[in-house]
Amino acid sequence: MPGHTAETIPTSEELDRALRWTVGHAHEGSPFYRRHLDDFPYDVATFSGRADLASLPFTTKADLRSAYPLGWTAVPESEVRRIHASSGTTGKRTVASYTEGDIADWAEQFARCYRYAGVTETDRVQIMVGYGLWTAGVGFQAGCEQVGAMAIPAGPGNTDLQIELMIDLEATVLCGTSSFLLLLAEKVGETGVSDRLALRTGILGSERSGTAMRRRIEDLLGLETFDIYGMTELYGPGTGIECSRHDGMHYWSDYYLIEVVDPETLAPLPDGESGELVLTTLRKEAMPLIRYRTRDISRILPEPCPCGSPYPRIERLTGRTDDMVKVRGVAIFPAMVDTTLERIPAVGSEYQIHVDRDESGRDNILIRVEAEARAGLTTTVQSALRSALGVRVDVEVVAPGSLPRSERKTRRMFDHRD
Image 1 (cartoon, helix red, strand yellow):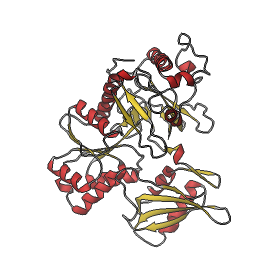
Image 2 (cartoon, rainbow, N blue to C red; image 1 turned 120 degrees about the vertical axis):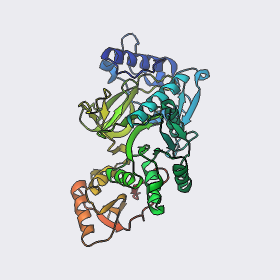
Image 3 (cartoon, helix red, strand yellow; image 1 turned 30 degrees about the horizontal axis):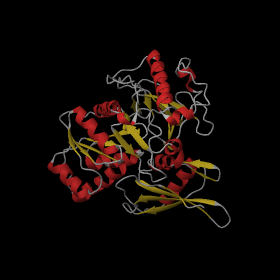
Image 4 (tube, rainbow, N blue to C red; image 1 turned 180 degrees about the horizontal axis):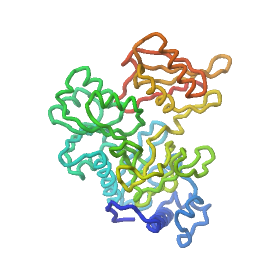
């Protein structure tokens, strides 16, 4: 629905009207969606909204790739003002297209994220994410400028330069992946310059970050972290963010409708139950999404947030369906390991999961964790993980700082089976 910039919660009638607009707009303008919806008894006049939504087919990243480069776009190409794309590391790039209205809407959503993290026009925001085809850099910058804060477009990597900019330009807000902020925080700790920093806020995106990891970042840099949500297919980062209560992430229900489904059966799940997030855009012009399977695991938190925001919340992501491996019939997510380790004070925030198969065909799990060596620790960790995962694991304790740090996302799951 063009022309929307106000921060409002849609009524039931407005939500149904927005859904009807999205479905009609996608069917009329997008060659992909015209084919995709052929099996649905589609009629703009009879599609009612939420009551009919479950009858529509899901869409997936594979569908996006099959429509490469612009077969998904639902407006004339003359109205496309920008494109972004995924990295393409797991296949053909997914290309996202934007109208002028989409760009304005994205900036508005991102500005809300900054405001929920307490960012104002007095802040200096150091943006340490990728620019170019990726959505992150330009999204963080557009939202920053809309709020009226000073943008410092540092880009990713080069910890020495980042620390120099943080000190010289008196940055108050850092934006980046949790992996890079951890790398940066440890470098600050080594160089002893923390007392020269003016930091107070960190906004973490692009990957899930565990509580122990965030606590270490906060302690070393002297700031408060906020988890932000989003992905290239939607607009980019900016779909939602934590508030100061840090109890779930608010999402902008005037731009998205979120369903939660069982990732195996795809049956809808009630609010409060964990499953795969499925998103439908309500105002996106160039590249609308209808029942898009995100692969992210979370749940809708049905209770109002104590912060007073009217926007609904989802729980911080607990994993992704494509991060999951099955070992001896048991589904294992990295987040299960993460949440177990953070309850053991002697263990650091970094870990790796290695799955292998021996000559007899038996699957084995080795989990490497960082900690100072001490008697009985390996047994303690092994027992806790076995209880949490439901399978026996081998544990290797390695020295703090010895596992790889990343300037982008940290890989934690390694499946070495054929």
